[in-house]
Length: 185
Image 1 (cartoon, rainbow, N blue to C red):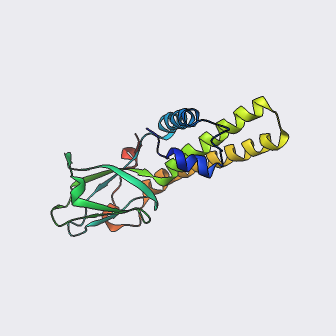
Image 2 (cartoon, rainbow, N blue to C red):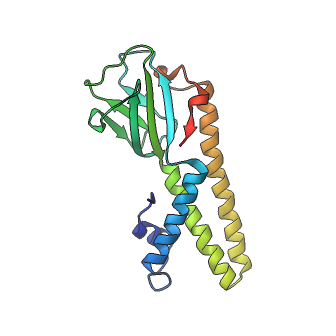
């Protein structure tokens, strides 16, 4: 399942309906989604040991978050009715129904917005490559190379966030962080 909606992709990439049918564009989007999953996974996992049981808010490494896939507290799933996500800040806030204790392990599986951006870039590169095969153009070729560079930058950003939070975090509750537990699933 793709992260981007077909209408958004069509509009953002300025693809008229007469130049590509919805089914064709959806196939490109699904292919890009599978490639995103293969490159970076379906979600990222943020895992912390609770050091202060009074904290209710946890800052994810990325500020812009598309969704939270799941939350696990000491191997038990936490219902989505017990937390909220501020998508523009990456803060997950828990209700008073969730009780934290020192040394609990909190695991938040989430999809950063950058995954959607990567998927969109992959679709755009694929469509431009296809058009370049049909009608080669130096300008299109340069555009493809520029987009590939941007894609690599996005992928590096994901890797850097993983490395950066392995050593430190800007949230007191995550002072302990096991970088080996930061995964791309």
